[in-house]
Length: 164
Image (cartoon, rainbow, N blue to C red; front, top):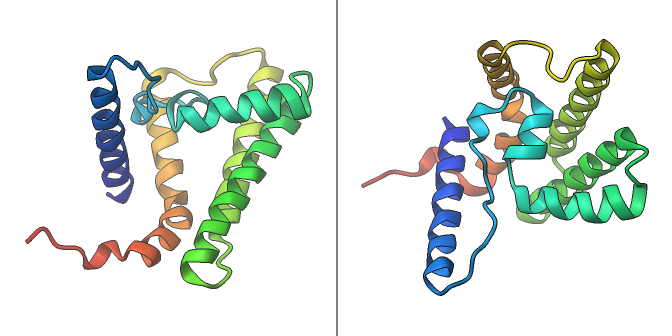
């Protein structure tokens, strides 16, 4: 549930800001692209979630720092950067080292790179049809979500929030 709530909240905030900017004549790129329809982790992280961060990392890490000829190293570097960034935010918020963000992004990076390399080796763009792929991705993401949302819940204490 926390995944749905966080996405809905973040999407609502970004949509609100984007619409206000659009009323002022400023067009902005979308931040999300239907993340619940992702077929796999590469699709989720690369094409559907936090597209602002994805574009910055693509421009600065993939293109400039690592180079497009070494995509696995580039992806590993992006996941490491994201893990350190998120772990630092948890460290500052909880005033202690937690480690679950490092584990979450490390695991997601490993699986993303591994499944991408396997698909390339198999000569396929996708490994399974759309519906089973979306369901499998959702199951994997749900299974690993406590690694991400555990520290987030300790910071924001969502379990104590009430609507009235």
